[in-house]
Image (tube, rainbow, N blue to C red):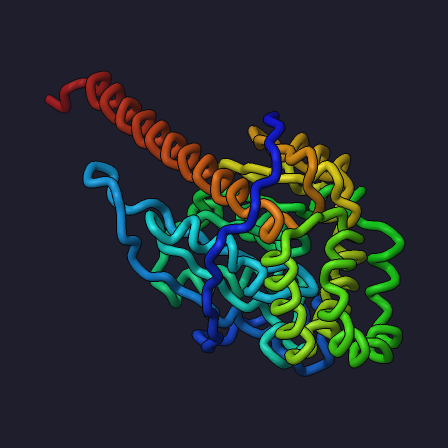
Length: 338
């Protein structure tokens, strides 16, 4: 475990736009996702693809691509300060998750998001990627790693759900579809004006640029009815939290958990429990940070991605070496056919 101070947001922002790649079927019965009967979970729409990196090691080649999954309710704009810190040496993919592109009826559970994520990797020609999941989306990243470890090079779980203690009474309130339907128009209109207060309520002390980025993300989310999508995901959270927590021991890829001590949304004890439950996971603690780490401590998120990438490379090399050794021993120990 390492204690690290929160860093200031990167000075550059990134323009993102959304386009559809592929429609993803819901995983399991439609009713299990919280969707209306007959609806299909939406795809992950591509908001940003930085393409091939400008720099890469001549010996090792380009670094493993990274996919950044926004939180809930949320927007790809949450990653504005992180992308510039990663794009120089690796391909960065930022999708809009199902339900947040304008049709909240496409919102789904963690399993549906994992399906959409794996479809996104197929559509973008990516064989393996590091997956960064922020808050609720950490559950989707974990689901993908359990289901398809060969496609997930590593996980970075930022202020993430996973441990049962991450769920509280506020989650139950936000899962109430009737309340959300009543207040969603007001939240969409007025919440961005209170971005700074919202950040402090989550334990994060954002600098002015970070507040501006949060306000932009909240405005986009309001325009696209993100609060209604969040209500669907909240119901999934309450229903599936115990199941996910019980399967954390099945995560077999290198994992870094990044947590702020002052996080009031996902308590630090939940992040500590998450790291303890995932075999070999590292916990990186930011003493003076809260929940909104992509905007509050982007440099620490980028550092965690590189730690996970290094661990993934070492794990892959070790597996290859073991396989090579086993093959050699097997050949040497085989008697001559004659």
